[in-house]
Image (cartoon, rainbow, N blue to C red):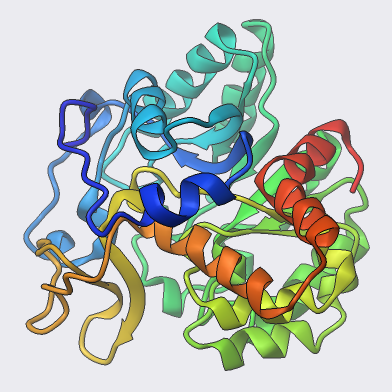
Length: 348
């Protein structure tokens, strides 16, 4: 389903004509899923194929590196945060073991442990196995799907119960957080993030997909809260393709050092931009048809890979803010590389 032999196409010449010159020479990818087909315990059911989550079930490490060369030609990916495909059809032990093996082979890869919120000892056991192998998980990747629930009906405490937080804090791990419900606009979500950072002083949180939102108004609620100023809270750009969201984020200078570039590979290869469907929920408007496509949601010839649209939204937001050349270079290099390196070093 996902290997480097698949065709690459700069569909609308976005990389060639606009992004390649703008993107810095060195980048760090803070959001990548890797794994192998044989980790699947069951194939996707017909119902599961109606969800965008089923677009991919595997992409091995070598394919990831090959796709980097295609998608970001002329650039060097200096490192990445990687974690399994956190879908319940996949064997958790095998998927996490693959991350361990990749960390052993490449020190530039920082692994995140895909966690089971219902079995804390299961997570601890895998974490200790990694240590015995001479490597250490940098963070954890909790995710709603292992509970076999709809994300919009899941609560934060379900994916991050107290016992799991105790362990994460004891090991000073970073949480790659796909927020539940409607995302960072929900008071319950924001309150739980406050609770985590207030009680657990060794935890840092990356809000994936710029925290998740259905519209810029949702993100505005987050920006009006105290969380953007929270030193333990970071964001990544994966799948976030709305220019308005970045313009709001950039208005707070503290976030200049806390936004990380993320591709959401291989989901970043979906040829389109995300939107909310009243019938299908969170899907994408795309140029290509997928198993979950609704009539009228595909066939948009002006679209290309999602990761390109996220980078373009970043660029357009910076251009709209009329930053000085020095400010734009600083902000661009922060997001594409330096913020991740600072997070690795333990400072913001």
